[in-house]
Amino acid sequence: MKSTKIIGAIGVSAALLVGAGVQMASAASPSCAVLDDPIHQVVNPKVGSSLLTPWEGEATKAAKHGFTTDRGVVFYGSTTQAAGLVGVHRLYNAKTQDFLFSISSGEVSNAVKSKGYVDQGISFYVSATGGTGCTVSMPRLVKGSQHRVATQNGETEAMTKAGWTLEGVKFFVGTKAGTPTTPTNPPTSPSTPTPLPPAPTEVPTTPTLPSSPAADAGPFQFAVIPDTQLEVLKADDQRMKARNQWLVNQKVAFVAQTGDLVNWDTDQHEQYERAKVGMGVLTQNKTPYTVAVGNHDTHATGVGGSARPGKTWELVRDTKTLNDYFSASDFGNVRGAFEPGKIDNVYATYQAGGKKFMVITLEFAPRKAAVAWAKSVVAAHPDHNVIISTHFYLNGNSTISTSNGGYGDASGKYVFDNLVSQYPNIKMVFSGHVGYAAKARVDTGKAGNKVYSFLTTFHEGTTNPVRMLSVDTKKGTISSTIYAPFDKKTWHAYDETISVDFV
Image (cartoon, rainbow, N blue to C red; front, side, top):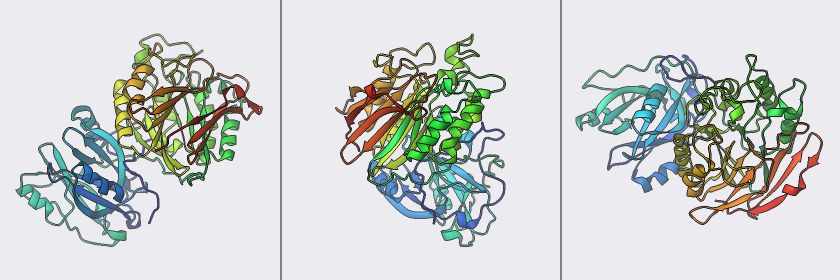
């Protein structure tokens, strides 16, 4: 049995999806042995919809939200990607209290854009094809605004008699430990089932990395890398690579880079090539990280570093080159994305110091829809200590920005008012873009909680600073210092220790 679990998780593909918009690893049938993780089902008897989850604890907690009929383990899937498997997206409509489970990216996109659903990511993996001798079909039915996957013998027929409409077989799942079986819940009359979607071409490839060495209750470190755009201008510049190797050696639990990874793009993409090598040190050593999108990482910045002609608020959303070079599979530990196949807005989780942590990256001057997505993510994870990494939030004097910096959409003030201040489990915000560096700014959330915001920009031309944060969850403290491993320089003026009420 695999030990790794993903709860409401998403794998994000390395490229934009094509064709029919359905995702899977390959046309080959999966090995029976990989479909060995129990999937639980709880039903909301009032509205008729149900929740499928690989986490027994979530099934238990769902009773508080009306999902009171616990059916226990109804089939077996996989919580990790394997050959022949396709990710099942879990979508939720808060207005109708409906969960929708789908392997079709086209259906997912339409549900989000037109039907009020929020994509909560890939919850588990299944097979898109049957015929292995150890899989059974999972038909899905709809009644009004409610959807349910029929998981019990005779349930399809009983539901159609009760007014539900059969949508067809949506995926195939495993029986216990891959034991060969015959289908126990075949799609039945009154009508011919809807055919399966066309053969998918790609599946999310985000790996779930092993637990951090700091996953016990002891102190640990995480790191925040400032603007690195001056570290990729020359082919022989080793500062980025050296910093990341040093971070690997320190066994940090997580690394967040706050944007402007590169300075500008060219037809040869040489700066991205260098950044890929530099950040690849973390990927190769399985140190989880994220990169926030800075304005210089978008088409809004031209050769030389100046703004391109045109509508910058539109050009800043063109991140094709960045997404061609980096995907969530490079980052590791990514659980969800605002837009499938893009790293512009993602969230990652890790455990350290005996606590759960989440890092959310927000795009430059984020769209309000991206902020709303982030709100849904935080609200769904009240037991996580949340860290937000975004390129532009604080001004150079550590005041919260009231502008979009000449690009994008929402200001830092909008992000604070609508996201940061709203949830007591949001603990810290990290940004760069302007100024140099500063000690923590302290704000108070609506629950009376303290939120610490750090500016770390630097734009260093000769060394490689990184903000190191030493966390002691038992003492409730975080100590911050800025150090450059390239020349062993420390900026002691920014040393400080803050008190944090961890959840």
